[in-house]
Amino acid sequence: MKSLILTALFLMAPSVFSQHLEGVLTQVYGDPQADSQDARINYYLNSNDRSWRLDISQTKLSQQSIRSLLNQPVQVIIDDDQQIYSDQSLISVLSIEPDLSRSGLAPKAVILGTKPWVSVLCKFKDRSNETEPLNYFQNMYANLPAGLDHYWREVSYDQINVVGSNAYDWVTLPKNRDEYLDVNNDPDLSQMFDDCIAAVDALVDFSDNGFGQAYEGINMMFNDTFGCCAWGGGRYETLDGLSKLWRVTWNPPWAIHKQGTIAHEMGHGFGLPHANNSDGDSNPYDSPWDVMSSSGGYSVNDPVYGLLGKHINMSYKYNLGWVTDAVGYIANPSSQQIVTLEYTAKASSPHPRFIRIPLNDGTNYFVEARKKVGNYEANLPGNAVIVHHVDWNRNEPAWVVDGDNPPANYADTEGVMWKVGETFYDARDGYQVSVLAVTTDGFQIQINGPYGLPDLIFADGFESP
Image 1 (cartoon, rainbow, N blue to C red):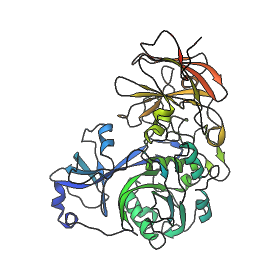
Image 2: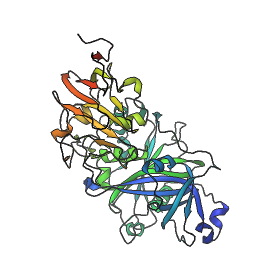
Image 3: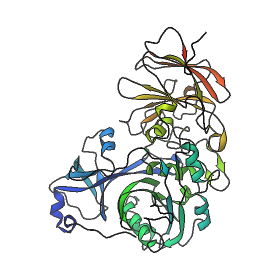
Image 4: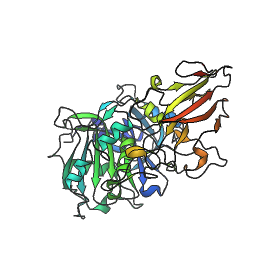
């Protein structure tokens, strides 16, 4: 149930809005079918029962600055003569500033524990078909291979689960499909959210999933396409008396039939940006090593839930708290060490899960081992060591490092797969990462810092002979 809470700010004349707006800054990603176009990113200001879409191109804010403001109370400064006619109006923003008068609302980046989601199934008024029956969506959350609970447990090393998730049967929206689209075929995501939530009002208590816990996120499933994309991100709303940031996805039928796409959009809901290869173009769907890039590339194909999600790169797992420095090897300029690195999909490991190389410019390399194995990684391009350069001031912070020049358009080539006898040379700070041998469950790797010691020291503490 969506509460109706209005403050005096929203009851005043439009001229009041010509100075500033207050609310919580949120972000939603739009992902086209089959990674066929550039990604879309919408920014919103959510405040009680209003949501404004923002054009922030004039703010000149860096990506890192924008990320620091996401899901936080902010003041948005706009042109004095700009008028706002509807929630769907695209507002040109001059600046965004933290609202210091309000306490921080954003959850920490770390996401741990039980995170139940609810799927609400919404039919457009002029579309009577039902994409799949209710049990399809209920079983989608199962703790079985291809189920989302099973998937998130494996990917997070059992740090999160979606126990207590549920789905509710089809309801009908008050408008025809085309009424939610503008002249450019772009969807009014705010109106779709409002109408879909209102339609399930009598069925769902968002503040209590029946096990004493509020839902973490909302997967909205629609029975027809609505523009280019499936969408995922965050939205600050008051539902059933609970005001918080909800993780939200908007899914057309083609996404509903690909578990990897649902996982990708849920990843955006968890705050994850896209990952990418390193060819420098504007397409973020060029890496088959990450569900947050090419969600369907080199994926396992399930007979019921379609192309399944792969793992997420180690830097994003690190950012969410699923792995820590305690289970990795952290390089330094004096490093000259041999590390046994086990493959990403292995449930537990006595050896480091990753190598992190902090660089002088504040960025990092993350080194991980990938193997064609298991429920979600069996169709990867190959068994290899993969290196990501991670810069949180980019739209897609994690880029797969390609040893070829120029980098390939799609990261499935030998240039990105570091194998025995090959060495990655870091041009920034002078690190070297050499692949020495294949092990039963991964690779043996030598990491040399720019001021490496003369004798090799193994990560288990033994000196080299």
